[in-house]
Image (cartoon, rainbow, N blue to C red; front, side, top):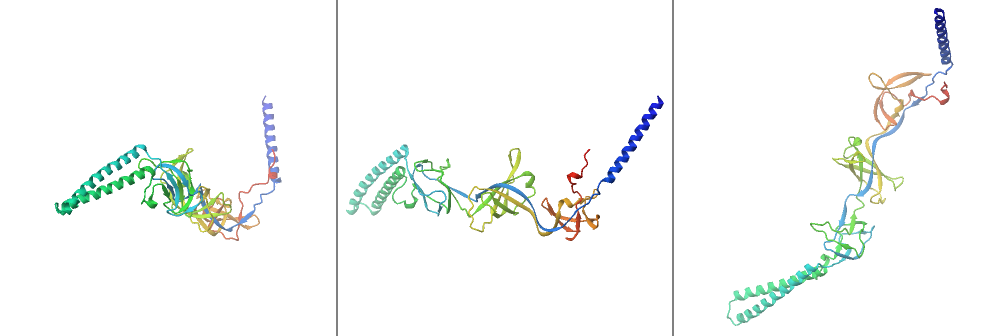
Length: 372
């Protein structure tokens, strides 16, 4: 039995020795690793984050009627440029029966009062002409008569306004003629002739007849994720690209970051706004989708290398690269890094543009691997 165990042990030792020899032989047959090198280059490095959103006017003005009725005519259409005071629409009033009857009754009452004051005035005037009453009594009656005349005219005008929406003497202030309150472009006319509209008052927003805006004052309005909002601040520059306008970038300035986020699809989003510095005649339509690159940092024309060339000391975590000193001979050089865009990183000092940097993490060609 002992003899069999001894034989087995010897066989195992022999096989292990043979395997070790074969492994060493294979290692000697492999080609030595040859490292390639790269050099630093002058780059413009921009560190940025991207927000998605839309191009919208800074302010949109909603034109609403101050009287209810039916639209008789519309004088504008979307895309028109109009000035303050230009006619937008004309409204035909459909009077309220109760209000119309009250106004009609007020006219009749004012007429009765006027007739009575007129009789008293004529009677007192006759007595005054004869010297029976004093001038003071006569003037009091005259004032009452003129006041009754004015009340009658006012009642008539109020009746006309209730019935038709306007009256003589109002001119451009007529309620039935809706005019623009600002200068700008018509973005939308959400009503048509024949539509019924409701007046704007304390209890109702009213029907929008037109949407106006100054298209020369456009802003980018978008959202950023909560993971990015801590990196940005007001007054940072933006580069806005509009999907519908190819090969065109618009400069902007970030001037608003919402203090409160809103949950969307399980993530917290923060609204941002940036004013476009539009210096050419390119027409940007309101509502177009856009992306804004928020420039966090920028370094123009600086010495840079690929981030993949940088190594870090395992103890100090300080960055360094290996510089070629001879044929496949390299020397460590500590470097100071600046900003990075994820591909290239700025090198503030430690190397020059002529130094050849070792590509330490290069991949072997597919054919270099030995199949098991």
